[in-house]
Image 1 (tube, rainbow, N blue to C red):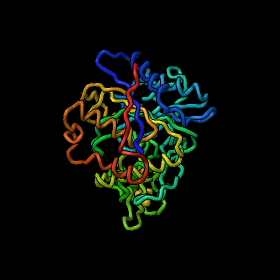
Image 2 (image 1 turned 90 degrees about the vertical axis):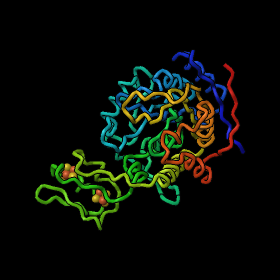
Image 3 (image 1 turned 135 degrees about the horizontal axis):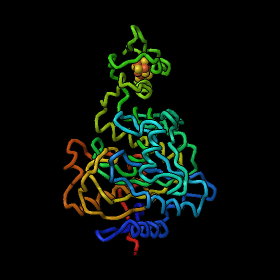
Image 4 (image 1 turned 45 degrees about the horizontal axis):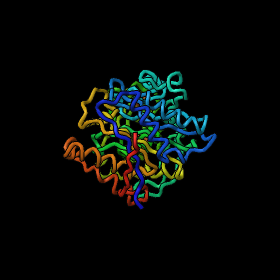
Length: 359
Ligand code: SF4
Ligand code: SF4
């Protein structure tokens, strides 16, 4: 059966308040909040934007979505999880909450609390079964796993590794702990730079294989015993242990989709998705820059099917651009892989029915 996707157009003359009004109408006319029940702990998942990034979803629109969720439950919260790459202010909950607040995502402006779902250092996760080709279990950020339902707000963009970043990527990478992100990206022996080591011992304490040791105040690794779990790279603050970004782009998309399946499975069918096709850029909101748009603003989509909403989003963008802007931006990766693999795992439907919501 085709996935149902609702669409509210946004154009050049729209303002932040008029987009808020269209978002409210879209939410009311679609079934996107139907999975949320009275009293639920409902996570409103979004990317708060890297420092210097201007393309992320506006806090005014998130406030509107939170108000709509608030009509159903008093227990909603905004949430994201920590990242693994070092050039970021989102690698721990303290810095992450500060940048979120600077972008307007704070209780005083949105009206709901803000959480970093994998905790202070990004090490809080709950294992969730998925039984996939790459993973038997995923490492889901604890406070996403502990929630009853979720509304996923996604700024659709191009992506350096996956071609496109939509709802699937948002729940896969975005709802996993830092270790979960690490195992999607690599899962190999980390790179050791002993000259950066300050002999703090944190990596030795967390290594499950006991294969790290400090001698002469410098770190060394027994590569043969390493499990490739990435825990040491997550805790090292001095870049003495770094991730090898070694996963093939095809495998990365499959791994990401298995994570998305695990997250969706953890919620049952209790997730709604809203995609913003506004300020669509070549790269994602993790990049700290004012990236130019690659297509005119198109609007907002809502669905309960993550594959259908991503496919509809991509189709609208490519039709408006009159070319494959994602393949042009990232020719080394085939963005369609994630949709096909997600569809083959039963995560959603690449066929969809698009219904435009009247203004
Ligand atoms: S955590 Fe980093 S700095 Fe500390 S001992 Fe390990 S490698 Fe060295
Ligand atoms: S990747 Fe895991 S097993 Fe390997 S050294 Fe680091 S903590 Fe130990």
